[in-house]
Image (cartoon, rainbow, N blue to C red; front, side):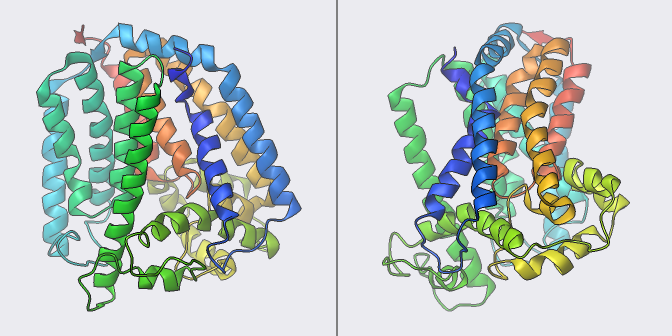
Length: 402
């Protein structure tokens, strides 16, 4: 069990950041600044602490995962039907409101404000929930529900939503069906990751080329992303390998933007930022914090975007806005939260309804993977899933399936 329990958020964040830092050193873009000593020290300490905590908490993860397998899952057919109807009608409403779907044609602002966020959040949660139900029951109806749950992200051509949901589903399956990660599984997952990165690039070319009206039907034409990322690569921009530059840029540009902000000593508000604003905007879903601080995103654009390595590359890791508000102290606070939260959250789920533990682990794994790109605590589409899991764990303590 200890081997499979390594699929915990602590190891995930180490792997994704180490991969990002290694690829960063390949220097495939002329935009990226060199690492500062402070940045090197911060990441060495942060990733070391995460690995140590992940290692020493392996018995804890083994215990709660085993208990989750034995406990059986609780569910409500009425609730599942409600979510299905909601996400299908929500997707239809998004298409009618936007007069089409991004999978068919380019749309700048797709979806009904607020409703679209709810639809995507419920769809991503249903993906995880239905896979967990399938692992317990082996009923094919749950696979049908799983497929339907991907429809909102497919229609919206949301590569991020599809990838994050896929990661969550794969983790749930592995945690339920395997006690150790065999070499064959690693090979399959690795090949799947490479294929996913390739498809991600093809979808990026298709969407971007159509967005700017480029007269080409060649989805291997990566000229635009090469220009945006100032590619420093011997691989031609129109080739079978060029779509991989999308994944390289997405994986490494957040680190570059964070380093650029540190180099320029960027402050979001020279007059100081309140502790309350920092806590709200960094640790609450943005669907909540945006109501409390409606001008916050404008402030980030005003003070922070000027330091980006490129106007086209906006993301900058989970630590970026913490640094803009509170400097190195903000980054340390964010790092400390990453260390503490999973153990407390999962232990609480374990106490009230252990059948939902694996769903909780998978959501945290996705969030910690996402942290190299953005702040997962503020991203409502994923962070609210933690709340939904907790609520269902509290409510659905009957109707057990063995």
